[in-house]
Amino acid sequence: MSVSSQPGAEPDRGEPHDPVERIEGRIDAGLLLLCDHAANTLPQSYGALGLPPSELDRHIACDIGAAWITRRLAEIFDAPAILSRFSRLLIDPNRGADDPTLVMRISDGRIIPGNAQIDAGEIERRRKRYWQPYRSAIASKIEAMLALGPIPAVISVHTFTPFWREKARPWEIGVLWDSDERFARPLIAALAEDGLIVGDNEPYDGALVGDTLDSEVTRRGLAGLLVEVRQDLVNEKEKAVALADRFAGALGPVLQRPELHRIEFFPSRTGRHV
Image (tube, rainbow, N blue to C red; front, top):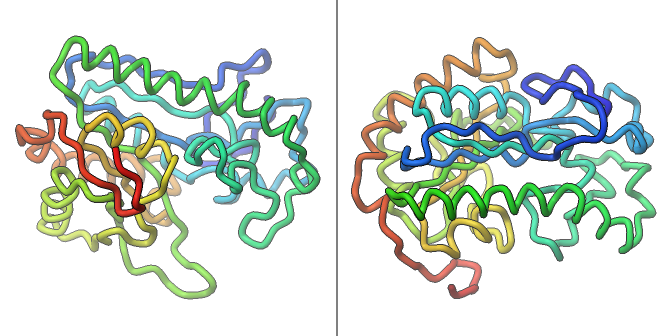
């Protein structure tokens, strides 16, 4: 694999390459952490997908700081975590297998030369080699945690850019969720009480068919949500760790709520029914 100096990215460990980073934690922790866009690594055979290497330092390649946050939360709660070890430019593990944005041909206005003319066969090869092992690792860990108990709550950690189309984004943390409010409502309240500027389904909507939470968490009836942190708050390791510590202070009491550790099903706002 090749890799740039992207903050929080998984370091190059050469090929053959395991597409999944696993933090074992306690199987009975009652919490599973995910990081879909943890790394900006690309297989050596793909080079930089025709991009200048500096482009791999941008958010189009991975979620800046998300891996640091995830690893710190896993440490604090002694919880299992599953992180990707390949760039979202190769294939996006947070998209459904048939999503047209599974492999991005254009990202944030930048044409990705190595993806521009990609055919169905190459998409399927990447899906089997990278996307599927990541999803399978999540499913296996959830099954192991369910077998032992307690039923885990799940958090997927992402980050977002401070500006979009030259407009500032005011939120410091966004909590994204679909229709199951068991986890989202109390966490939003706890984070706001701590003085953070919290977006409720901002800057994105949490109802996305086929994304990691929808496929691996919501469809199992587990309490889960996606957390988005503004990248300028976590673009250095020390800042990311400090933010994770603050987040953990709000999260800890919320995880004690018994409804987070029950299986319940809710119709999706997308119209998909479990």
